[in-house]
Amino acid sequence: MSKDTSVTKAPIGVFDSGVGGLTVAREIMRQMPNEQIVYFGDTARVPYGSKSKPTIIRYTRQIINFLKTKNVKAIVVACNTVSAYALEEVKAELDIPIIGVVKPGAEVAASITKNGKIGVIGTVATIESKLYNKCIKEHNANASVFGTPCPLFVPLVEEGWVNDTVTFEVATRYLTPLLDTGIDTLILGCTHYPLLRNLIGEVMGDEVTLVNPAYETAAKLKEMLKEKGLENSASGQSIPHEFYVSDAAERFMSFANSILPYDVDTTKLVSIEEY
Ligand code: DGL
Image 1 (cartoon, rainbow, N blue to C red):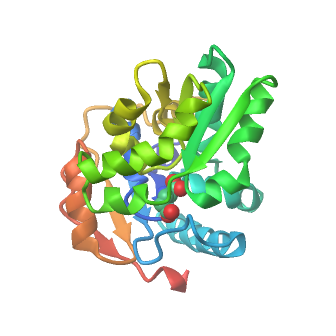
Image 2 (image 1 turned 30 degrees about the vertical axis):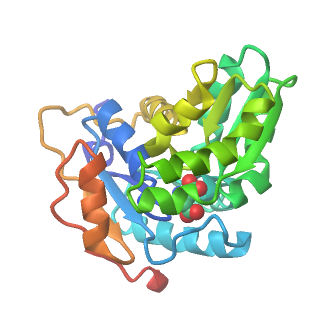
C-alpha cells in the first residue's frame, strides 16, 4: 500500500520557551534533511525555568493548539522544563506523537557512564522536578545523579556571551562542586547549554563526557517517524522551514541565523494567548 504523502510531507512542530530549542531544530535539520520544521519560540514569556507547573502546562497547551493549526504530524518539546513539567499531561490529550528531550538524554547518559556518577545541569524547575534522576535510574538503577541548577546560563547565552570570561567565571562557580563529586558524564539539561558546550567542556576537563540531549532527541525522532511510517522520504526538494514567536521577531531571527544551517528570512509574530 502506498503511503499517504499528505501526512508524510506534513511538518514537525518544534517548540521552546524561546531560542534554546533552536539547538534541537538544528539537530533535526542535520539528521533529517527531508523534514520540514514549524518552530515556535515563546519569546514573550521566556523564561519557563522559574515558572510554576500549572503555568507551564497552560502555556504548553496553547502552543500545541497553535502548532495543530499548521497540521504538524508530530511534536518535539525542545525544552527541558516543559518536558519535565507538562509532557505527560499533554501527551494523553494528543492524537499525534510527541517527544521531549529529557528521556533521550537520560538514556544515553545512563548507558555511557563508566563509574555510574552522572551530573545534570538545567533550570531550577528541571532540576527540582528530578525527572532526569528518575529516567536515568530506570536504565541504570545503580547510578548516582547529581543535579545543579545554573540559572544564569540562559541570560548569558541570550546576551551572546558564549565565549566570555564572565561566563567562564560563572561556569566555574556552578560546576566546581559538581566536578568534586567525581562524575564522568554531564547532561546539558537545558536547551541553551549546548551553545556553551566548549566553555563547559573547558571547566569540566577531558575526563567528563558531555551529553547533548538535542542530538539524542533528533535521533529518537528519526527512529519514531520511521517506526510509525511518518518519515518524509521525498528528497531533493528545498525545505521551507517556518518560524513563529510571541515577541521580538527580529532579535529571534538574528539569533536563529547565527546558529542554524538554514537561512531564516521571515519570523512571524503569534498572539499565543489566543490559542
Ligand atoms: N528552554 C528552557 C529549558 O530547556 C530554558 C529557558 C527557560 O527557562 O525557559 O529548560
